[in-house]
Amino acid sequence: MKKSVMFLAASIAVGAITPVVAHHSVVAYFDMKQDLVLKGEVDEWVFRAPHAVLKFVVKDDKGQLQLWRAETLPSNLLFRKGWRFNTLKKGDPVTVYGHPSLDTHRHAMVLSKVVLSDGRELNPMKKVDKPQ
Amino acid sequence: MASFKGRSMMGVSGMRKHRTQLMESDGMAAGKSWLAAKVALAGLAMGAVMAVSGGAFATQSQPGKPDFSGMWLGSEIGQGPATVNGHKSTSWPHPAPLTEAGKKALANFNIKTDDPPERCLPWGFPRDVVFNFYPMQLFQTKKELLMLFEYEPIPRRIYLDGRDFPTDLPPQWFGYSIGHWDGDTLVVETKNIRGDNILTTSGLPQSAKMHVTERFTLLDGGKTLEVKVKAVDPVYYTKPLELTVYWGRSNVEQHEFVCVEGLDEQVNVPKSAQDDSIAKDLK
Image (cartoon, rainbow over all chains, first blue to last red; front, top):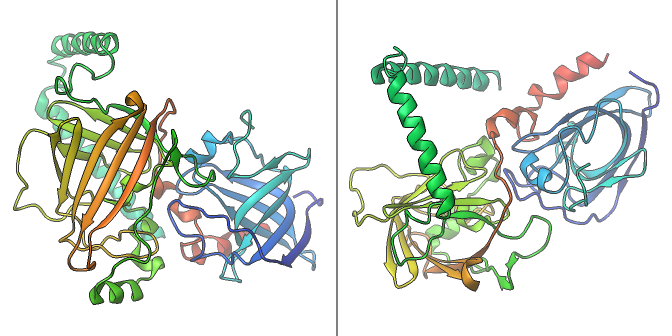
């Protein structure tokens, strides 16, 4: 595991609603009133139904590594918006924006957007011009 | 989730066995029908050529009637209300005209346990016809309109051959649908709906006595499909519920959507199936 991962911040704010109208309800599982921003490294990009999941590793303020899961739209809908199975690769540094799980013991969130180290911003609700 | 996985695998092996038995009973596995298979393949190829040259499925629908065959898509997710070629889809009335039983059912609704897709079961009818941000492919013949929803494991069938409703069928995820023509509009009646499913993800109920009428009409020279839906359910609603959904002709592809494959990764599965085991790997 590389040492570049770091825990960025978890801030409370009134977040924009990001409805995930597929498979299951967002509000039943995620606290949409809290914004969460985490910086880490991609562990695995699970590109499939019923929701794609970005697994990534962050280091907490005690230096412990944590594995987080960011759920987003199913791969079918993401594909038509320009995302691919290899859009995110293991080891890629990422900044992940979203809303945390209502179960605070679980390192899970619903994804709002992910920012890559080259500055590319990927938002599951916005279409990109060419496949990423 | 281990036991769930185990059942899935048994299901797959069971299906393989069943398929092998079918092939053997047809004589295919025994290799006797090599020539017959070749002739059949040639016939299929010929049929495909004829279908393409005449417009896919155009020659198979009822003469003089609209052909709904093709790929349809509403608005893409995240792009606001579903407006297609200038036509804006509507939602079920809000607030819903619930009976006392309907109010009680809504109050008792728990999305974590009472919504079938949470366990990768079908969304079912009539929810499917409302979700127009996934592509829907229609195949129309004289006798049947087949609907393939990208995210559903089973197709929906609407019979056009004049049959009546069955009396001995248990409730179905899509109910049982029969259609007839009213001029250029296809009128579809659906009964035999599952009362243990829900009308909306917010928990509005539906009963097995719900009767749905859909009116399918092509607009804008065939570019737009209008579906007017009217649901009558005396158990849960004091008045009929109505909405209209619009779909536009589309050239997108449908892709596989195997819900159970990714279920273990979701936030709605027990935590023990995910974070605990992974935390050990990191230490």
